[in-house]
Length: 263
Length: 294
Ligand SMILES: Nc1ncnc2c1ncn2[C@@H]1O[C@H](COP(=O)(O)OP(=O)(O)OP(=O)(O)O)[C@@H](O)[C@H]1O
Ligand SMILES: [Mg+2]
Image (tube, rainbow over all chains, first blue to last red; front, side, top):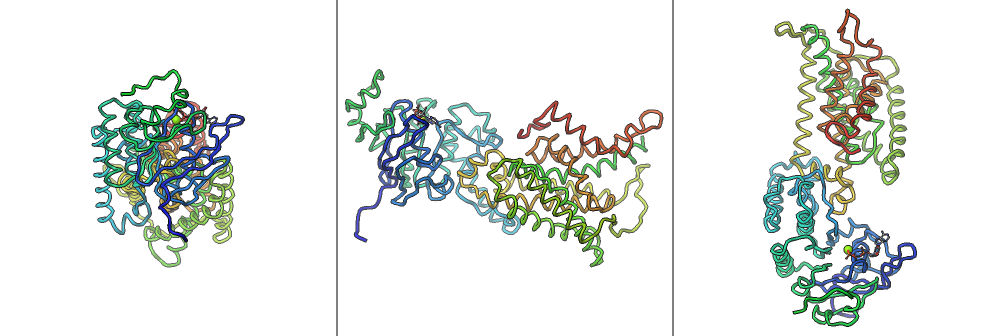
């Protein structure tokens, strides 16, 4: 093989998705470079979450391919993709309702020897230590998300914004190398929003995790993302830095009626 | 009062302990795999008969034969799952239910084939009951109650303290989310069968010890176990254990001669108690006492 540059962490090419006669995604192509925090913006109904569902294997595309580090993973089962290191969060939080908050995070950790019997009896000491380490890690994530106080509460007892944070926490626990975040800051108060941005940036910097982030808070996107893709009515209409995309006339038109608080 | 304790309350507790063991397994299976496992009763009978074969041929005590019961029910459950349930995992729960009904018939046919239709009893010495202040109880009944309590406690530890237990609870909460969170669902399903098979093997031996062994013994327990599991909130093992005890007590007490020395219910109709409890639960509180999954 001829030597060439490393493939992008994620590449989407020519993805089309129809719901009946409605074209939700129309030949969408985009790339997420390895080690980047990439933004995905666009007005409501643009097809962003649909694209996430397709990338993560929840929906099969009608046409097009998804590549993870160069490998074709189109329509692969979500749990297989998870095993390959791709995690996602849901726009509407989806948690285990009858488990506690800390347990919700612990379950999301990558596969564990203790899920198989008779391990609990054969290697009790090791399992107990692993279990404690896992709990400690989950608690430290909760600490960072300002949820430590609710660690032992049932997941259903949380507010909407707190559930979003748990959703983020689960992604952080997953050990994934590519994480798709669907509006991580929606419904979260402003101070915490800064905090979330810092957590994402730190993970990206320190652990090299690649992020693709859907977000309506464009200031947050500007802070966080090196590159942004803008989707409208199922098509990519602009890409570049947040600054460039803001000034794109097509983007302004797509967001018609919305005012950018450009500084 | 003493008569009530001796002849109704204690036997009710013993029967309840047996139902609890069977119903917790059913409830676990429902939680993790979402289907009503109709072969559970016959799995119980299989366990009882294998313990019987072990204890008569090896001359070991009934208690020592429990591992032999589990050694039969575990592979039976795993093989049935691999052959008959796994291929249907994505179909409707009713399809799996019918498939498990087929497995039930197969297991029962095996039992008839190897052990014949005549009831048998575990070899056990005739011993006088222990007496405390007029309360009379057979030593084996004490062991049955303690054994069931120990099983429940172990199950509780597994579910609440181990990753395997957490993974099982995650699957019963949201199987798809569990799967995409990286839970090894195939391993969790196997583990669920193993646990349920052990519980039902113990239940089978206890039932055989309490009464006698006959090929349909499991089928009689099945209805009560379902009623108990639903009463406790299906998919909630603790609820099922509680429901089992309630059901055992209800069945035994239903024949109590409350008025004029005539039993409330003729003993022949005892098994109707489970029906009544089942129907009443579904009508009045379909989610069960502890809010199950339906
Ligand atoms: N399962 C579905 N069946 C039919 N239509 C769908 C389905 N899922 C999404 N759509 C449609 O596809 C379009 C894109 O939806 P999508 O959820 O991807 O938007 P989005 O960009 O994430 O919007 P938002 O910012 O509001 O979350 C919408 O018009 C939606 O109605
Ligand atoms: Mg969306």
